Image (cartoon, rainbow, N blue to C red; front, top):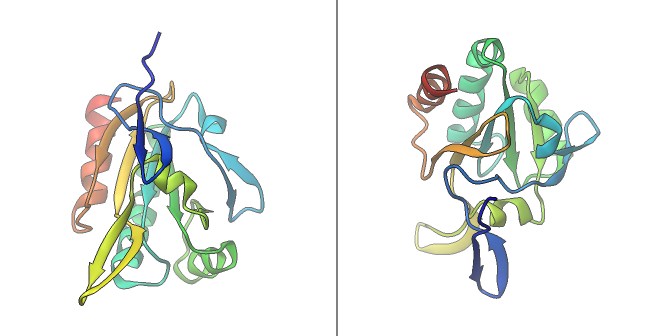
Length: 169
């Protein structure tokens, strides 16, 4: 039986992410108009990437890199899901503008981000605010976390995720 790890931050209880443990499930609105759950993809490897904001330079580069490698991920039985706190309508515009072939999920209340411990205090030009720390999780066919990357640097990251799946799953 798997051990459940929980963490409490600012009065919020959530499961801590640990390699080899079950990934937290979620139910989020997707760009296809449906509510998507991580558990819907059992039997497939999932590349779950959290990003700060649609239409920004780093997030656009990352999304387009995933787009450009989408076929290779698919050949390995992997599904790509992008999550940010943007509303679904903004996600749809982002998808259309850049031809993204994978689902984007809206986490406006940042509950999924909190469960994955990527909702962080950020500092930009001296201004502090809460937001997404760019992070990626590879979840295996059984729903367990196989790999995580935090504080992701966009350049070369998608290839790194693809290579991890090729070599390990």
